[in-house]
Length: 403
Length: 229
Image (tube, rainbow over all chains, first blue to last red):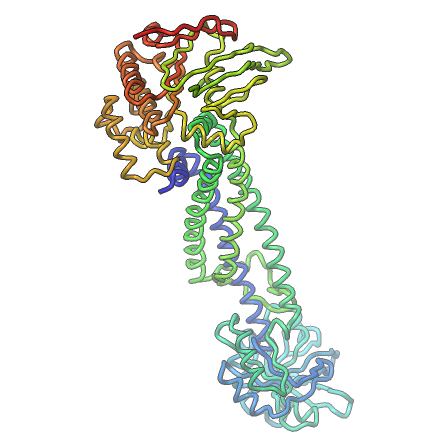
């Protein structure tokens, strides 16, 4: 063991109480960081999942040049569905901007034409159904429509009431009956969406069996980029997007939130870094005489510099390992039953326009935790540099006062 | 041949706005293998002169040479190497490293020199035995008496077989018997290995052992007498 390492290790143990307090501060801060990352990643996963299940999917396949105001049907939708089904649940959808009219009012909405059996497994609206029943397997002579409860309130319709849906022109209108009401918690969904059978919407649009997009729901949202790449290669004539590309507002929101969280973590650890700086600086000043003796005996200033840096690194590595273990345990514990934030979030659980579950299941994203480890160890190292420099510059004759 | 040389050395300290002279033009040469005691009243400049010979401080004027090499202008790293490789120090206040055991303190300079562990042990253990610390190798300084700590400090200074040993009041904190035993050890080493010893001391027993006594007063050499055995 080198002298710097031996002295550094023993000095950390020698000031046990101070080392424990410093290590405890770093460990507690890092545990909070891991927990905060876990909660934020859990909430992002919830947002992405709900956003994906509200419309696009984790990966979405569309016709090239897709325009939400005038969507182009997907060519060879059957082949797309087969390819997509290899990766997850393939969800075909048709869509159109429509006007929904009831006896007491009308509203411009997005009409989503869905395959009821598949959509029931995929869409958050199925879970959020609060009145009536899900879309029937067969559309029937008069189709059923599912609307959000807030829209129903605005149009003053209830389950069983009539709803006329008009597409591009007044002659493209179809009568539906409200089959059920959903309440996802997202105003954008609950107030701006009507779900109908895709075959009925195809009839309304005058195009047989139209599919505008195929969404792919994956078990792991972080698989989206890989699946999109593979599907893109398999379907060269289609546009394949990840959720972040298809729903840029969600991706932007998450990027912005991650960036601001990282800035906050940096500030937090800057303050922790000051505490470490103070702790190591104090120990250097207390040992000024001892450091002077070591220099007087011929210890290279570089060795003392290394010794103090080692003390800082040892403190940070042990503390980060401890904090990681505590934080990871906390995330694992909370991931079992979830963290219920409904008391804090109010009645509408909406982020970036998409519904968010009030119960968050924290999850560890290893890459972000590694970023955190690197940040803390680097900050600790930086905090140790000044005291290390001071230690190497102690004038031996002043430190020992007498030879 | 001179191993230490002070040439018109002056040293003054600044205390607030007052400049306090500690050495006022010292010319002193010490040859290889000498056993020299710097004596004189408090404030006469003994410690200051030892600090300058030990490359721990710089003179305000004049020059200091160690083994014929002027110290002025040497980088801190070079000065540290000089102290590590050529000079052994014995401090009045022992100045052991508290987190190291007696053995580890004694081998410290050998470690700094990069001497391998087996050789360190071969050199340090007989020295610890010679100074009466056999069986106490694993004790930390706070588990040793003042006399035992000073003996560790002597072992530390001698382990690297330096050309020069500088010792400031090495017996000041020791009882008479311990002090005498330490001095005998150092005198023996001086005779056997030709190591140069320079002490500062008020202690009559140390002064009595000197082969050369340099008496300082008010920062000047007042008397420089060589003695026979």
